[in-house]
Length: 327
Image 1 (cartoon, rainbow, N blue to C red):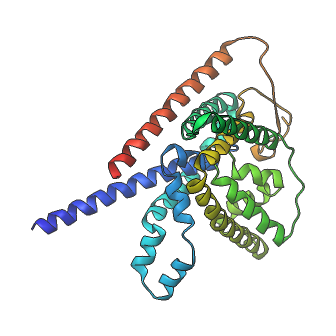
Image 2: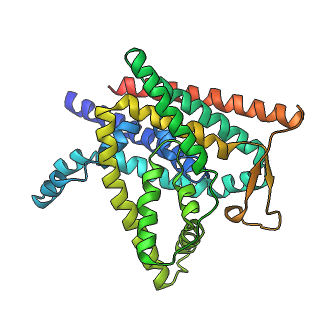
């Protein structure tokens, strides 16, 4: 009887954990569809970033050996498969269900929406900054210089014009490899990297038509090659990132925090629409400006940013408490 009750409690706890991972993934998926916002940022805030990177990096020889030996349970445990499945389903659900809402907000209520995103990223960068734990004055100065350099790089990167498109399978593979690496880095948006490479429109349209099964054989091939590039980039880069988090955590966090600060350029709420004749958001271009005077819009934007900042700090605190209870 005790074993039965204990088993039921264990299943209940695992079920709650699965729902928690699904919810985290849902938030990550919603973030991934926002230009300039990374799902990696949300993972970091929720306290699962290191676990996610570690799980992805376990696609290695040991996993292949366990699969070859048909030790399925050991392979699943090695990969942390239950965690990845729950998170992955949440990411997919979040991206699909929130895509149209976020795009509508960015198009029709752009200033206020960007204010919220600005507050979210600003709070996230503060959380990352707290993870930089230098020892001594020398390491403090070093971490500051590294963060500043990363911030300038991200600031420059998000200001680049869209690149030219090269319609070749090799180029789509490269785009997938680079974009997925950016997607798991807090502060760098994979979708924005695709936009810079000139592949965002093509891939987005193929995915949109694929849901309706209206794609050609050539488009299916492009999508498969792109996803293969994503898989290769994700597995290879996650191993490097895992090594950095283990052996150089403070430096790595300084770089990631700098990326997030620099990416705030893309989330600046006050922007001029340079292409009012264009209807599709992904094809529009904007230019930042500073308001000449304090007005009602500035007050509302500030309020939205502050509420978003407080919300993300509260979310991070909740993530830490959940992680502490799990440990």
